[in-house]
Amino acid sequence: MKACEACSQLSSIRYRIQFDDTKSWVLVCPSCWQKLSHLNPHYRYGGTWKAKK
Ligand SMILES: [Zn+2]
Image (cartoon, rainbow, N blue to C red):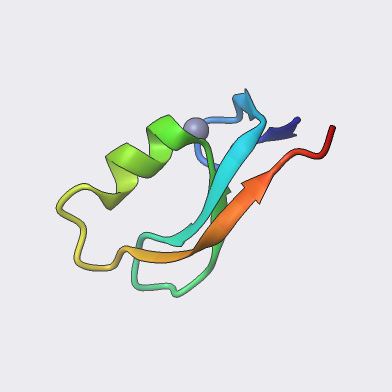
């Protein structure tokens, strides 16, 4: 489990995205991914990170 970089919640799945014009990549949980990608012109998807068991 790793912490979401937007809300700090632990998540076993995180999405690597850009969501602003700083072009920096962040790893966020699925709920933040939905919020940050919705109607966001800066949104870019860079892959999915999954916890290994
Ligand atoms: Zn989050």
